[in-house]
Length: 440
Image (tube, rainbow, N blue to C red; front, side, top):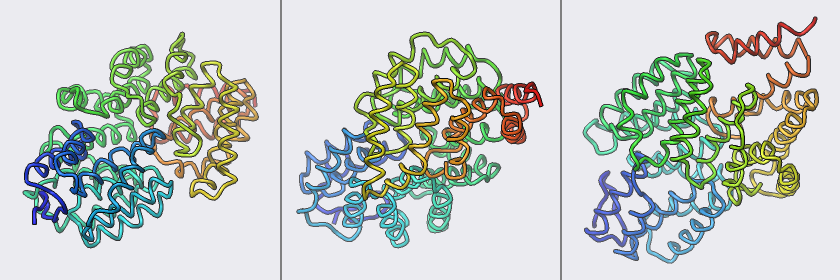
């Protein structure tokens, strides 16, 4: 029986197809290279190769884009008649749940599976991303922590698992160890997206923008080559460091240059530019006609069913480009989802809809209403998924709305909260000045 690099038997594989499949797994794990194309090549070379089908399905489904999700469903259906071993059956079951929008059920299958198959890197990455969409990064930390002692440093993929653990640590507040492990992982696997990304997060969360820019500049040749599918997100982090330093024109230049050049027509890729433009807009930076072009890119990539996080960002682009009617239609679709039986129904109802309504109120200058809508959902904001840095765009908007509404107590409380973790941040000092200027 042919096995993969971690020793798992591969049903229906050939030696030639397995070689291509391993390249696909590596591209998938590093977020560097054409994983979808490589998995497809392996599928064509060996039509009974179950993990080739499943690998491609994971790469498509985890993008959380309606069109790609449809393609993933077809792959899951195609694999069902094949002979699957226990490991492959777990992947198929988890994907079946995921493609129907049942993320919690999908990751529950993977979590149990990884107790028995701790070397399954495809499953580790899938579970990491799904938990990220659910906002449960402590599980990312703990799941990889229980597997790491079973790995040796010379086992293929060790650096990837170490990087997953580091990212879970970072989102759970373990910044020092997260940085140390990420730097170690980056040395072992220099082309990996994950450790570069995690160090950027550590420096964002600990208020070290100069160090962040230095890290990115020194290693740019490793994370910014054309093969890196998510380099746009690292460029976004670089732009955030410029914002923290008050270098708004530099951040806008990154938007006009590498961010626009490297974003892909996929929901989670588009969120980066959206969030950056929204922050710049609230700071009073003239972004010109950029919203018009950007909003057009969102068409068809957030359907009010797939992912609340994507719908929030799509709504931002629609609002700022003057497409308020599209936001009303989006809210109607979100309410329809909220009234249904899908796993995400409760999240749309209690968090997603109030956030979009709050953003719409902010957009039209109804700042008091924006505060009333956004303030109560802060405690549940983690549920929309994404990182602390990504979700901060909502808290950023709330802080600005409170200041513009003249609600001194709320504006001061939010500003002090922000300044406590990053006192040198130019935008945070701005929030504090605005709040203090409100008449008592």
